[in-house]
Amino acid sequence: MSVVTEPMVTLTVEAVDQLRDYLQEQGTPEAMLRVFVSPGGCSGLSYGMTVEEVAEDDDHVIEQHGVKVLVDQFSAMYLEGSEIDFVNSLMGGGFTVHNPNAVASCACGHSFDTGENAGTSQGCGCGA
Image (cartoon, rainbow, N blue to C red; front, top):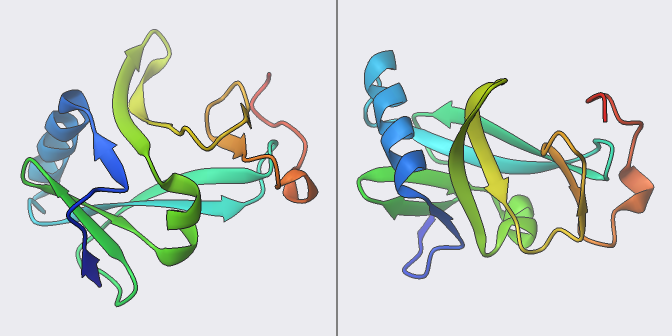
């Protein structure tokens, strides 16, 4: 596990507030948000998020305003410089990733391509 001084990902104030509130409501205020990338999705790579209480040995741990984000080594390649935000919309609210490494993304916002991932893309299931 490594704690970084220059965060590879940042969180907006809204994302920090929403994450802190969520963790408090769940009774796990010390838990961490894991942000990861996996092959697949309609653009080649997909974002995922989970809440975890323990970091893995190879995780990057990013702490911002009292909340922690975990990023594994594989995902770090694709998430460098990304910003995690919380967006409220008519269809509901949720965390979203603004990724400067993505050259294309699906309308649903859960799938992206860095220009090298066409081989892992799948059909769009988001209705776009």
